[in-house]
Image (cartoon, rainbow, N blue to C red; front, side, top):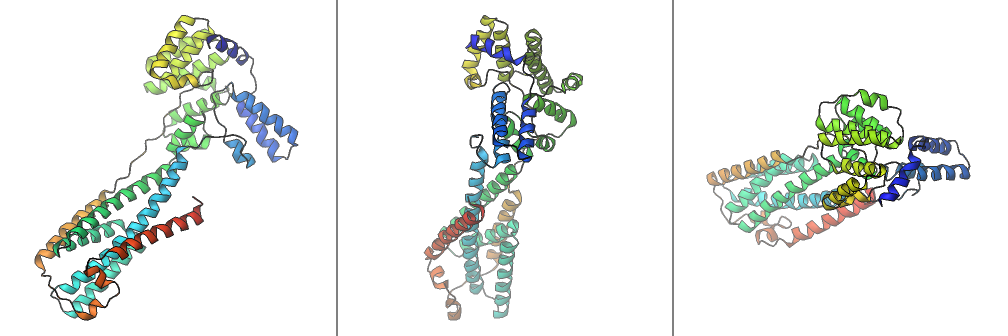
Length: 408
């Protein structure tokens, strides 16, 4: 392996064409309608250059051609999209059941309290309005407030199993809402997409760097790192002038410089700079680069010592291409969404419901005309299987509609 590395690094010194330039040429030739032979030669050049730069995948080739030119492994984005799809479908089905149960429970409760007929009608009307508002406008706090009322009302009329089910369903719903919000934010987060891109592909488009990296100095460093990854060393003078304060950013700068010197064949300078980078940040990436540099200087004892350490602590990094690796600037941190307001509304609803139940007397039997309301007898007799059927039908419809719209 070590001898192989020595011979691998020999052509790097003479390499003049950058991967960035080859990609731009392919894009220009593609847009100008160049012959197939020219495009084939462009792709051959790109694949050849990719072996001598720390770039693993080029999904842009697929976007440009509309074909699977580059086989890119599936990422977490595919999984997150499926998770979002199923989570949203389950959330909608759960909402349908909760609102249906709450509707019947509230009607049942209002009919059993000692109020005039006109007041019962008014409360029933307000109930329908609030439930529709919570559904149509998608007001989660209002939905959880009403759900909390349903939990306490069902408990006060002796339906404890229903009460526990409603509470469990509301907590599950809060989890699904939180999951959906976090997955949605993650899928649209430039920081996440940037991190995914540099980890999987080894480089990142500049527009994504601009959105994912906040401060100017880290952004400038990452632009340079990205250029180096694609074989464009023109900004090396600018890199030497940057003096970041953060130890991590200093490590990135020194690692970039070490990469530049290594690529140009100045292995002694590369060694010194990589050592300096390691002083600021203990990274297996920098250790791997030191291993390559010692190997190129024929210092096999030191190279093998680092290799043994990497085999013990970070064996996967040795599977990388035998060219130095680049450190990338960290993007903005992802903010986790937690449904505090919805849970607070749930607690308030439960407390309000128990307060109302303590002040209001609930009595049976109910009026015969009320019992004729569709499905009310089943609810009163605690036969909840229609609601279970409603849940599965709603879930199936959501999945089918989502499949038709999104193709997931």
